Structures are given as C-alpha cells and as structure tokens.
Amino acid sequence: MSGSSSDSEISACSSKFDPVKALYSDKLKLPAAGAPLYENIQQFEAALKTQKDIIPVGHGHLVKLREEEKHRKKLEEKQLLEEKNKQRFAKYEALLPTKKEKKIRNVLTRIEYIQGPLAALKACVEQRVRVKKENFGSEEVILGHIKRLPQIHRVYCASISVASLPRWTTASATQRIHI
Image (cartoon, rainbow, N blue to C red):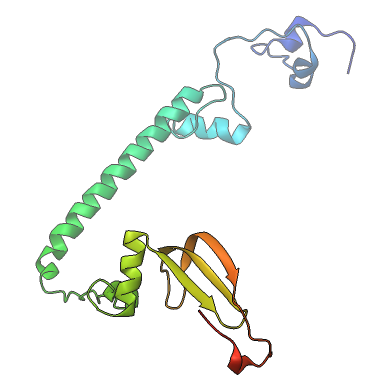
C-alpha cells in the first residue's frame, strides 16, 4: 500500500473512494456512526430486500425478542393442536377397552392374611422378639432381632450374637446335637 492516503480516497462519499486504503487507514471517518454492521455482503443484500429476517451485528436484544416471539407462537400452536385433538378423539375415548391391573400376589403380599410360620415371622418382626437361627452346616447359632423379610428364606437381623453348638466326641454328622 502507498504510504500517503488523501482524504478523497478514504471518504466513502467520494468518487475516488478506494476500499482497500479505507480498510487499512487510521483516518477513516464513517458517514453514519449508527449504521448497522453485517457479517458479509449476502446479509447486507438480504437486509435490503427484507428488513425482518437478518438482524445486524450488535443488536442482540432484537434477536432475543424475535426468539421469544417464535417460542410463544410455537406454544400457542401446540396448545391449539392439543385442544383440537382432544375434541376429535373425545367421542372414541369411552369405547377404548381398559386393561385391568393385575394384582401382584406373592408370599410377602399374602403374609398378612395367612397363618403359620410366615405369620409367626411377621409377628416377630413387629414385636421385636429375639429369635434363634441355627446354621447346621457351620454348627453355629445366631441370636438376634428380625429386622425385615425381603425374600423367602432370607432374614435380616439386628443386634446379633453368634454362639457355637456343642458336639459329641465323635465327629460324625449324625451324632451332633442341635439346640
């Protein structure tokens, strides 16, 4: 670029205007300080044709307003569509067969109504009775309060104490004593 630039080459309103010199010049004066800025020429040309589509750089509040308006319109359309669909399908709603919910039945749901050992276990849980459970394979006795019964053959206990069972002098499994 040439070192000197005259005012007529930098001025945008001049017939001798040189855009390259204007870009690199420090003396450039804009004819209108509040003129909108666009990212490229296509945005500028589109803004000349339609003013509402493209918003100039630095006008973020206009973008937010436009987005809020779009969102509000979408919500209104969605509500109108839902109302129309409700009205359209209201006459068919009574004709649809309803599926009855199958009541889940297992030991834990029936434990309140049955009698026997499971009812006794439930009473032990509610009354916090101290119980004794024998583990025959390990020759131990567990004493404690039953806390809950989550599954069949499972018992969760609290405040446990473990004791070993006495055995006969012979080690055969048939001669062991279980208390």
